[in-house]
Image (cartoon, rainbow, N blue to C red):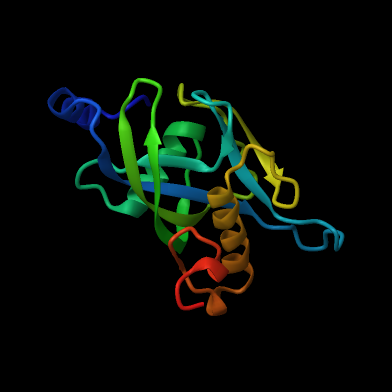
Length: 181
């Protein structure tokens, strides 16, 4: 799905001025199967973005009135045609500012969540936002994955392995960079 209609309607009124938008990142981790060799690591579902060629988790903008978890599930269905379920909150933080090639400026208040899909689920590209999709080893992510996405992926693995001890991230800085740490 290209830019949502509510944003293009806003842009007609405000031009390229910065928008502050709610967004989500859907981190889908496939755990290591039981009985797998010790060196096996989880995999994460990544898409290759059509606009810049970078690899990233499924991400998207929330529709007006839509709950954040519903946004993440909808984005996964729209982008890779998988039925997903929200498992855990990973964190919340701002991303940006971002300036797009047409001059539009945005900041995003992003909520990162770990989602799950059926064990045998295989994604397919189902919109024009992405050109490729694949399961990637969390130990060997493509170089174009951003630092923020790497933090979210690491948090998803940590939360999956140790849910009782996990604390959601407030901001997408390294924990050691956060005030009071």
